[in-house]
Length: 107
Image (cartoon, rainbow, N blue to C red; front, side, top):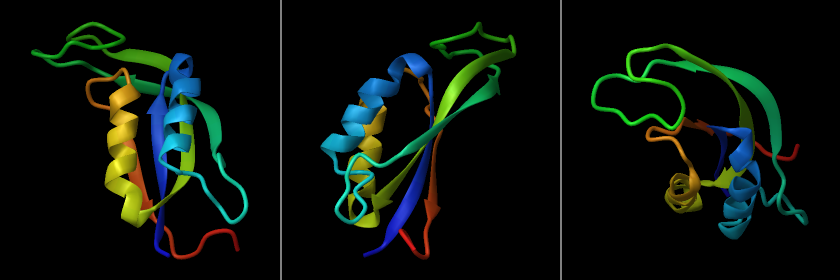
């Protein structure tokens, strides 16, 4: 089974709803365990451009905020479904969801 790792950057206030959304699409299922993920606190920076409606920050000003980087394994055949689930609950207009192909998992 082909898998990838998702890196999702999200405000800490939305972590539990993200965790639930990932569980509902079976992301983080490794062997006889589900709901497997890790997270770390990071600082994100961005500048909203004209025409945006930022969740945090002001148009034209650089923002710097604490967020969580959530890492979770996802089956490739469920990737689109998983990304859709994340986008449905994510507060950002342009959520950062990095998809990293994996050669092996759980080794």
